[in-house]
Picture 1 (cartoon, rainbow, N blue to C red):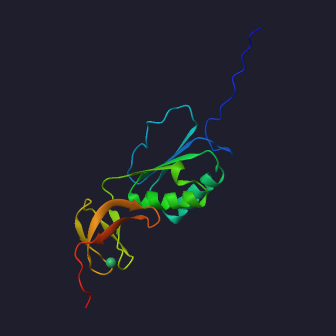
Picture 2 (picture 1 turned 90 degrees about the vertical axis):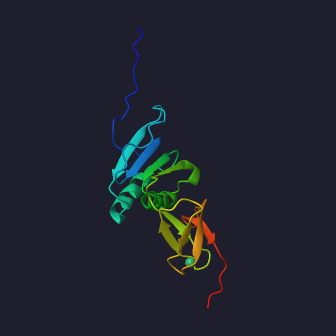
Length: 161
Ligand SMILES: [Zn+2]
């Protein structure tokens, strides 16, 4: 008399009200983080790059699954930053996103003088000339989510002539 009825689990496709892990990778990035447990439903997405088209795709996925979703983003920093911005628009909080940026991606350094950002491959502590105003900026490890860039500061105080 013990007939156990197993609940059917939807295989693929994202149902409305999806609650689980969404892994989105960009560019040549291979598998996204494999360390999560299998206890949650998981959706893998792969995009060539963060173009308006792929971002609107991501937007529609996230739009149908707003609550209880965790988002893992991997790939070049610029791409996952753009994707994170879309996710934020869709109502995801920072703590619901994990950004796994590639080492090889250039970091954007924010210049406090002219407010422009300069991409660089230099590690933190290096001097990079600002592409906006030419100030020698020391790069830091301090990432500003508001600026979407690492904060830099002037290596030397120089009088602008
Ligand atoms: Zn500058």
